[in-house]
Amino acid sequence: MKRARILLVDSGSDTTEAISLLKDAGYDVEVAGNKSAGLKKLYQGYTDLIIMNKSALRSDRDDPYLRIRRASYVPIIVLGEQNEAAEVLELGADSFMVSPPRCPRA
Image (cartoon, rainbow, N blue to C red; front, side, top):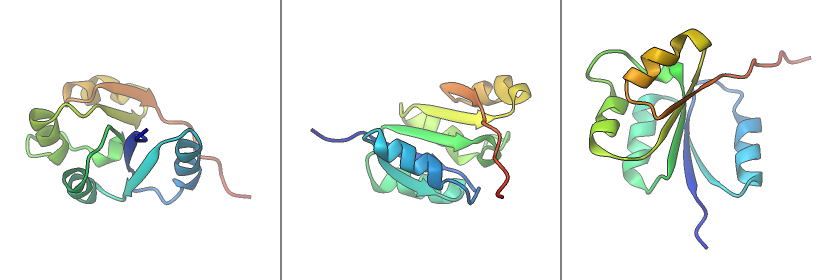
């Protein structure tokens, strides 16, 4: 059985735990550090779901992810701050989740 593929777009350097959790749950994970790299990876292979940080979105009409939404039905989940939910959903995200706080390194 083919494993579902998730594209994680996040410019943060602390994605190791998220990647590990997704892989342990049985997903194949592709990682892109910015929206341009994410768009390229999306077109290089089949993706079942995109999870991205709000910082990867722009509110102008030339945003690469708005183009994805116009051309594809790949679900997009965006992580961000509570006050950003309405804007993100208007830009075409399918779902919004409040980002978990990043734990400081000891």
